[in-house]
Image 1 (cartoon, rainbow, N blue to C red):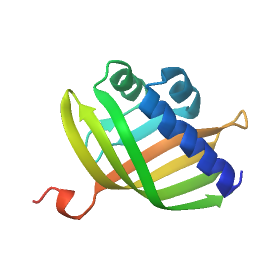
Image 2: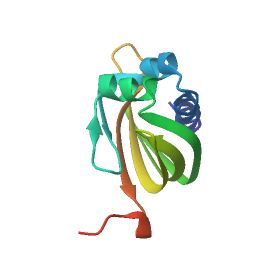
Image 3: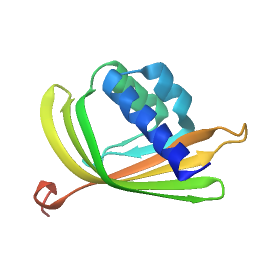
Amino acid sequence: MTSQQIRAQEDIRYQAMLDADIATLDRLFDEALVYTHSSGLVDGKKTYLEGVRDATFDYRSIVRSDETILVRGDHALVSNRCRMDIYVSGVRKALDNHVLAVWSKAGDGAWRFLALHSTPVGDHAPRP
């Protein structure tokens, strides 16, 4: 898969998050998904999809920038800066994060979203 194809998959994933499109997210996500939020919360596929379904994660806007994509064999790494307006359990949050997403080619030949790690940028980062 090329960088452009991975970028297209990312576009579909982010739009599905905004639309709370569980069917599309379910199709894109690997069964072994590890989704690490900027808060440190870690979800698997089932719990993340439940969070989107029940509006625990209610995405209002997502803006990506500074995106780089590296494809190596059956894996792709996507790094970007991501600004989100989201309600988490009913509380509005304006997030500004560095994000690393991992895509992997599955046994059936389809590319699946395997992992995400999100880290707050600058002043948004929690202090020890």
